[in-house]
Image 1 (tube, rainbow, N blue to C red):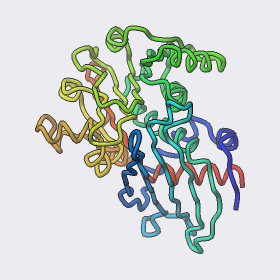
Image 2 (image 1 turned 180 degrees about the vertical axis):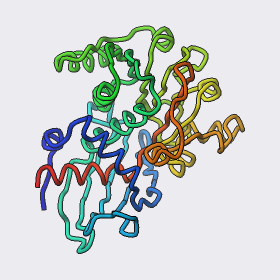
Image 3 (image 1 turned 90 degrees about the vertical axis):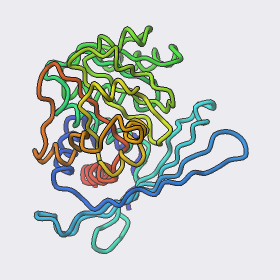
Image 4 (image 1 turned 120 degrees about the horizontal axis):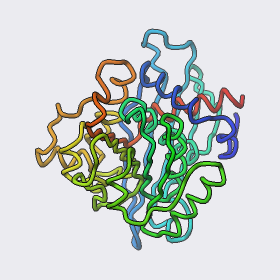
Length: 320
């Protein structure tokens, strides 16, 4: 069994390559039960969340490869980690042989999650962002933010990357690291002003208070919501939902777990049939993406076990 570090994951993957790997995975499908989602209460501080995300090759699907794989990701989300300088998200990915169940690889789950999450957003943007989208706003300066910046830059001609965070110093750290890699990144100050100028807005926060105000979005904007993963968390307001054509990574996950979808559904603002498509339907060409340069599109992801499986297989094959 291989033990694969974060650095080895970085060596094995590229952003354009993983976007295409995920496109193929969503087109072909996999068996992915709804994730196990458990709250871990603590006597002091915020509760942690334990996520178990299994998936395996769909052996009944046409064209499924012989053998195949089984994978499961074990993730914890501990919001208080930020206060002690550690990432909120921790995890491991276990890849198994699809026939024998023999362990094949134990992969750094945090890094795998960062890669697949960002590339799933970029996959959605390849259908939903304007072809000429050049100004990217990233909200949040956590570990995922540079991955989002690089993934979106892999599918659209991004010429300006603005990083906004409640703590400007943290935003500058991310921007400086991106500049060191040759990307056109800088720190954003006035969030409301930035919302009205961006072509793509990618938000990765765990906020319960919406920061993306629909009234400020210009025609043609694509909104990418990544951070909120519980019904209580929300990154966009009602007007953003009302003005946009809404898309999700998976209907089962987003309509159960994502506050940006769950809350508007509960209030009646968003009808289930108004969710235009998920990534399966987009990748298979069953539903349309962006229809004009003026419409606003909104994509909400909560993560899918299929993404981890596809990325884990890609890493394993590259390093085996």
